[in-house]
Image (tube, rainbow, N blue to C red; front, side, top):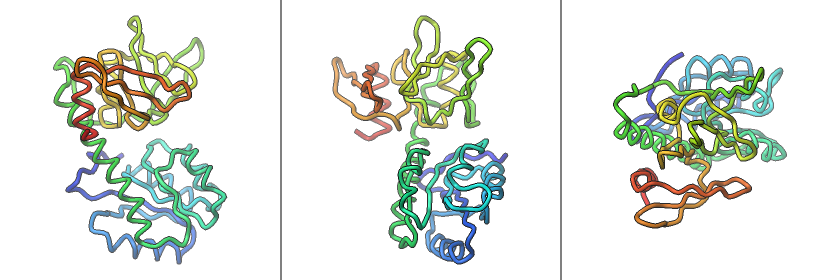
Length: 262
């Protein structure tokens, strides 16, 4: 598997696209060729090819047609070992809700103009810039006894008796330390993790997780609101049904302000 640092402002977005129709591939290829910040690293003509290319090339983003033979765009995402950002493309708007339920960053209804495509890819660039900022801050503030892990952690492991759960980091809203245990919250249930919060901070440093407090590691993609709190701290409100509230430390507040530019 190729390893790369997430694209910063000066780097190109590494992209794979998949579509089973030749005219659609040719049009999309032409549109992308007009964008200086895009590096098309692979093109797939069906779901199986897409899985192979995504896992081997580890692109930043995939433009994925939903209706493809054998394995459609919605199904194949669950079969990936590597999880890039996803932009779904389709000629049928009834797939929109399903697309967003699969945590896509955007949804393009064919035929889409280049301006709409640029708007979707701008979201990708913003996300990559944010990840880069998180990784930079985490690296600067890391405790020296923990080595920096450059590999992106694709799954978190939770063990409960004889059962082992594989959790996608993108689905986790925050992780808290409680009485020496690390607990990952997905909006419905807490999962017990074997790693310490310090270890998880390192393993998730290339993703959208930030240490806002000695007891909290938060996925900034799941922050709904931020409120000013006491003594230079912030109150972070999570986008779950409970609207979970997490208080930062002053150092954690400084991190959030830096990353989110607030």
